[in-house]
Length: 165
Image (tube, rainbow, N blue to C red; front, top):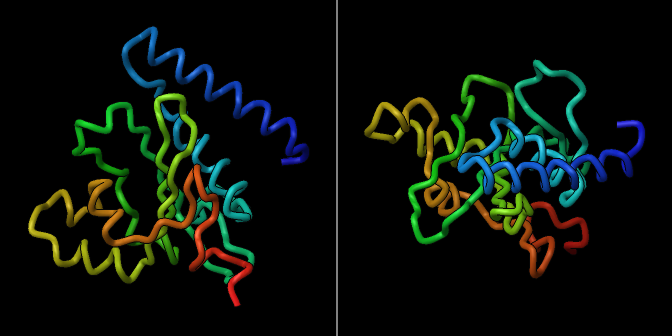
């Protein structure tokens, strides 16, 4: 991205368009939430976006060198539950997964991070074919992972905290 301000402006417009589309059409605009989530994760966690489309990961943590997949889930009704995240690509070369949870306005409210080893244990120990393919519920991801950012407190102490002593 050559101009981060232009990108921020485009993402803000995309958020508005996606929210308005869903309210008007009654269904989400395909593909938009992940683009917004990738932008938010990079900006809020200080990650560097990947160089190429075939890397198998979406960004890198410049502090640790860890390669991360970025997943998103827009939660329109928190009382329903049962939301799932996109399939984890276990055959690809990455170190962690970042899950950006967004509200009905496509604004992030929580970001979780789970390490590959922890996710692999869940996938390998799974009983269902869906779970063995790397599908996982948001609730399960939250149990396996760690909250690294939220709308109220910002960045949490822990893995992504550059200020930890």
